[in-house]
Length: 140
Image (cartoon, rainbow, N blue to C red; front, side, top):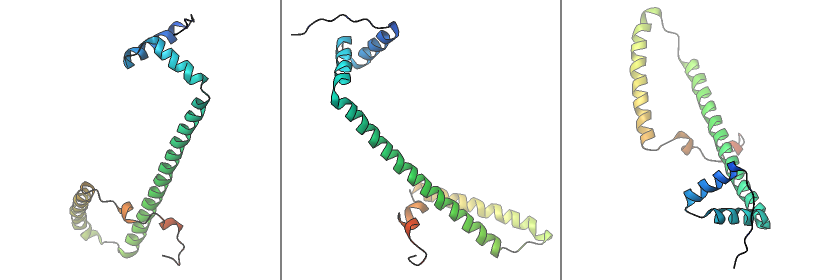
């Protein structure tokens, strides 16, 4: 047995209730009843807080992984640039044209190799242990 209650809603809210009822295939009364029950339920707030906490924890872990990956990528690039600048002697003017052609060929080969590696799902970041940033110089 149910008791009848008359309530007044702003037209915008009524439209939202009707739209949700249509999308869910429920009556407007069922939508309003569920909303009121959720509002009055002491567990509702706890459930929402727990859901937000889980979501924030997941986002925090994702941001930590992004920070780690960006740090590794930056250090990898910096190490390569330092190494390359250290071992590569400057070219004489007459050899620069040939070196540019050879450089383009090598770059195209690099891009092809990178494409093959990415298609296989391989990643440098996957090869690096998760705890690499926690180790000291003696442990490495």
